[in-house]
Image (cartoon, rainbow, N blue to C red; front, top):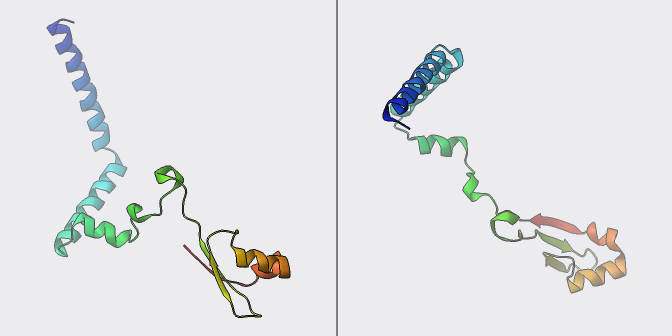
Length: 123
């Protein structure tokens, strides 16, 4: 490509970008967003807050603190289930259904009855 044709192509792209800029400058939505941004920055200066402070205030549980998903690093951890036998007062904490005492209770009392003994579930 010659230098002249490259120059003409860039000139045409520049004209197109200028037309797009003019369209955006006349857009009411852009004006509203710019006004919002201006007012927000003014409030941040007034109260001496940074963008990170505002984000932390509006989103107290950032995505980084979210529990890992299967794609992030293997299987997710099972929930801890805590059962209490009302007959004996014995407590069983398990993350799976293969717990010896829990299986014995289910054999003796039935699955539905033992599931009704569920006290709480923790992450």
